[in-house]
Length: 316
Image (cartoon, rainbow, N blue to C red; front, side, top):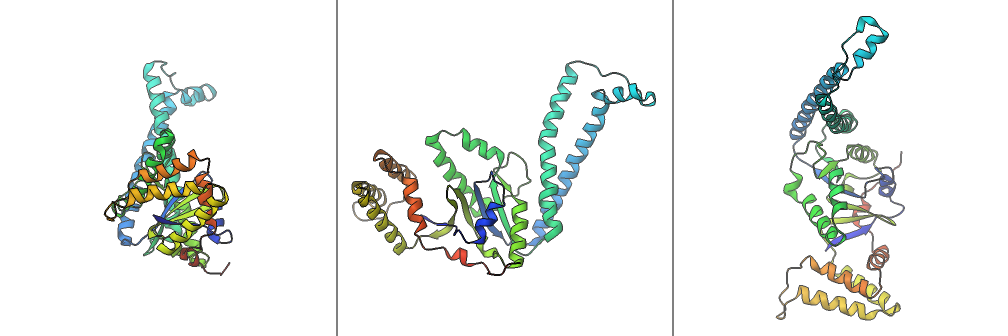
């Protein structure tokens, strides 16, 4: 399983996340080392798209001045701006609904472009290696919430699997509301500045899933498995904790499931299926043991990740 490490309380990464979007509970970070010219082309495409959106909004706004009777009202106050009264019919209602849709979709896109990627490029340009921050888009969050409790974990696992897939990360995004992941350009700019100041090294943000827990942020390192010695040590700590709670049988049931699901009768390793976590969690639930709380407490005693050594002690 991927190695998970709680962000140390004294580490600058903790304060970094405290300054980010308070609604964000998941971030996926990686270092983009693709050719800078590719990112330049992508930025020019975004510029072109947002110019089109801006033209469309301006056009609808200008025509709406007559369509919705703005010039008619102004004409009552200043006769030189006189205009005919708008027609109150179904066509007007259709235009109102269309304009509401256009403004609700395009205004946030343009605003995010100006405050996000445009500001980032103005301040930091196109570095050879760029720190990338992604978080679930609003539509993805809505999809997560709409899933039933029994399907939500599987949905999240599949979502994160795609997020860290190298081929998926190469896909071009345009900041549209229905895309699965949204780039947090403000976080990217802040991380770039802290890297230049020597506070948090860019290496800290190599491919990783960051999850907000009740007691802080946890880094789930992708492509790095917990070493065997560490796994054994964690199992021993869990066994001792359950023994102290008078629940040692829970540990034995868990180990029996793990053995059956990961090893065939002839000793050949089996591919671990997704239902193992659910079965183990159900064992703890049936025995009135808070599995999430227990693993969180054990994680606090785990040795810190080398990821958190990638920071200078320098402070500006």
